[in-house]
Image (cartoon, rainbow, N blue to C red; front, side, top):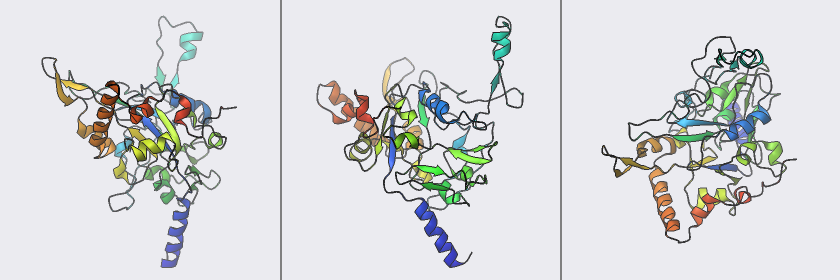
Length: 352
């Protein structure tokens, strides 16, 4: 490639990664109970088609754990500290959870439930050794200080999206609202985007031979309706809106209070899903007495959310105490959020 061609290509890639505004989600991990309502809402709406059975554009995992897709944190992708793209790995069907089948006919319709147990099998008819959410509630740490937290995930619609950079067909781009989409007509299934995403949030459809990912429910968003995963969250863990909307909870939590952090900021992708980190309970000593140490080691939380997580936790503890003392706390009021409409800024319309 000549120097002029390379410059033109770089400028075109930059235009594909540019948006006028940026939609973002904030998820409070102190309220997530791992119910999978977000997963089910997304699954029922978008991935019931042939070739998408293994896809969970929205998912919830137990962490520290292998996650979904399995071991996604060890697959590479993203950028290094110098801003250069890091090589990644393809995600196979097993790592994505497969399309597991169950012997419903035998157990229920043939009335063998007393002698035959419900058992999963792989799409190839074998016995699976792993499936989506199989590590649910598996804790880390040592008794009596075992710990875990739930981590809901979806496409981050990154401001520096490596999938856009990697696509040789220029099939991936940002909309004006910051949502990253894949043009299914331009995509030819090279899967460079799958390798490039360090979060494992791009999938391959073996039927259409195209890559697919979360589209942030943009047909809903265009009608002023929040994405299904956000709207259907029964724990009211989520806020949604534009990052530049100073009246939105997203702005107040990310910019004003700075208590919502991106997942793995070291990947260099500038993700637009933010997390209020979990406030750990206090650890116990050998005699069962409370200590001053957190049950979840701060090093663990820093490995997910970066070096500022300790400062965030200190702020959360301080503001929680203010609320307990009967004083006012804008931050706690934001996180409690008694009216669901307050969490979604301009996206409070009802689905038709």
